Length: 331
Image (cartoon, rainbow, N blue to C red; front, side):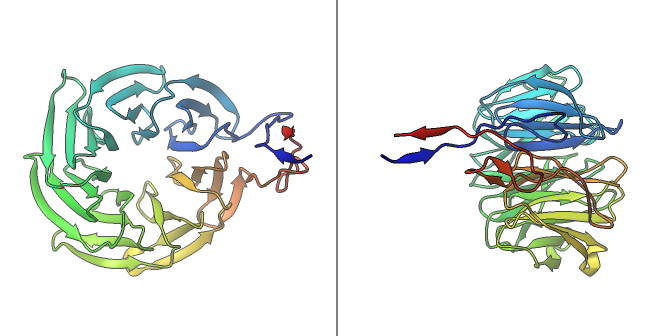
């Protein structure tokens, strides 16, 4: 006679603040202070500023790539088609069939346009107000891994699995420059708000600051774990949050000087999304532990959102003490 234990079936009692039911794939902060999230499999959730659930909406279970625009007005999912949702109405705004698989998405900050990166190495920029109208930006031969517009929308950065970053002038769709230096995959890009300062995240332990006029790195932020996975600037551009494979968040201040403000401890689970609140006073973190963690990035205080570290034998969340039930199969 032997017995095996299956994954725990979670049953919560009382209000569930900031707790999702599956891995959190994307987060966004709305101007009204509320938070939107997407979790597997394609479930959109709305939270108030205190973490109470305001709504839960099932959108699609087929896509794993989800991206919000910066004000949580729109949400895009990508696979063999691009679907853009009106977040407030939870309705489909546009559905666009794609010529190849979508591997990255970025919304234009001002116009009703969205850029898609593809597994054929091409970037396509779609006009959401016109049927199937798009421009192609062709430079890379390998899949696109990340996209980001400057805050004024004049430059689009595209990272490729070839470990380089192409910079595009969005007015004339011309290639401005190619940035090279990363020695492994580049999963995320971020521009400092109001500036032409680009930061790239690499699986080579570094986040790199680039001078896009010369094509040279200004600084390597290299105190991270093996893989740097996500980036987020505060709205005023004063702070940069960097997530790594140790599930830690490094908060940098005056990044051009390489000044690290603090390290926020991880919860031993992969981080998929980080975003600052609209007022910049909170940093929200979501990932495989199915909890939205809310931090004060200035003083390093965890405001809310406790991690889940399940003891599968006792059915106990060892951090919060919440009792859960576990389903066991015996043989």
